[in-house]
Image (cartoon, rainbow, N blue to C red):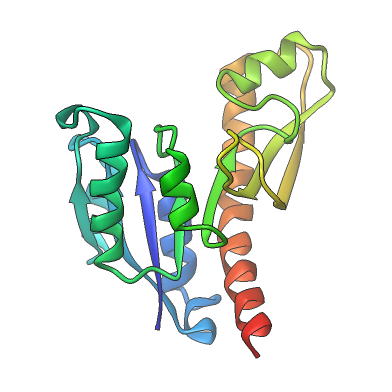
Length: 198
């Protein structure tokens, strides 16, 4: 059984989309995969309740309880590794990870970013795209490297930027596409690791 561990900080809507896709048998059975755990750095993350409702193991590690980013990441790695993950998925996990963390999960760490990378890494992506006069925006699933919002691009979705768009309106359209491409990208990634081992 391939174990997926998902890291969240908030509502966990992308996590829920992945869990729903896995449970509905679109790919989890065929790939012998499951979401083994959902972990958060915030005890009030709504996504934890969603995961618990699906019977998924959850855990909280408050980053504020640690003296350094490295200490938090070391404790987080220990918690993740309890599930023997084949894949670690960042789904709205609002922490910049240390190079040691990224190296530990090299080749099995995915993220989704709300822009068409390499454009607009970092925060405030929707407003930045509007301010730049872009005609299109979107989302990108990518492998994680130690450089923020870089790494091999696995999937992208494009939405138009409409006249009079606000960051919130554009963000809602982009998020609806994230919920479609992230589960597919996770499944395709697991499938590709299967074929590379064959």
